[in-house]
Length: 70
Image (cartoon, rainbow, N blue to C red):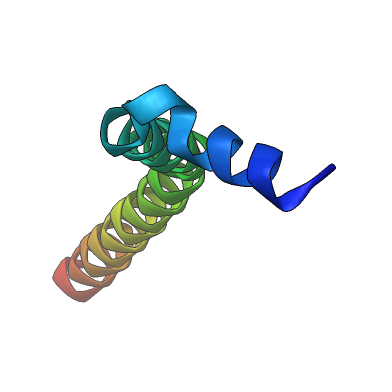
């Protein structure tokens, strides 16, 4: 591949200012679309752990209150 043909490829027939940013936006959206479920999964797991910890604490308080009352 010669330098002239490589330059004409990157110039995209004069439309490089429109084509290359479109590729950039596409790959950024693709990356976000790939990473979003992973971040969402981490957030959901963190929320579930916190909810389970609150429920365990509530059960502990309830059992201590019932034994203290008797």
